[in-house]
Length: 144
Image (tube, rainbow, N blue to C red; front, side, top):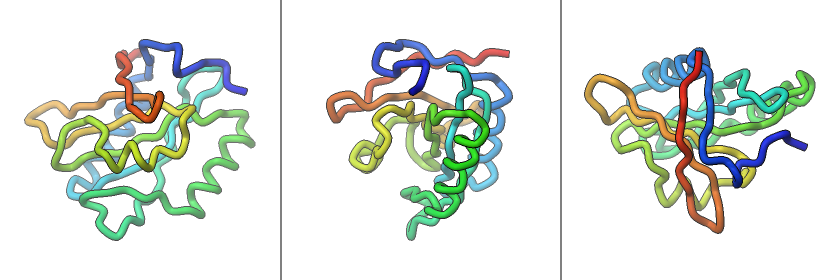
């Protein structure tokens, strides 16, 4: 069982190294949504696992490659890690959950990180958790 409870948290701390990995992943496919997992060990975020987006319309949606998703979850278990979060990008809209994001949120225990490429200059990344079929925003702090 995880050593943190998303529903009782107001703030998420994420290491700058992991933020940079997610932002670089988003920028590498600027016209498509990217996606992946964020793993934690001992209650702290420690690794990012990019997963291929196999959606039929990747500019508008993401769907994780099922085999890679299963393999990644296995790798996390074998490494003593837990699923902390799921990340994806919005190439042409803000870093807020869409109706589809909310409807397809399959891991209620996870924090959902969204990166917006629809900004000038600095990319935007926000974090949410699912509660009572609604996404609630968490304060996101980047740490060294």
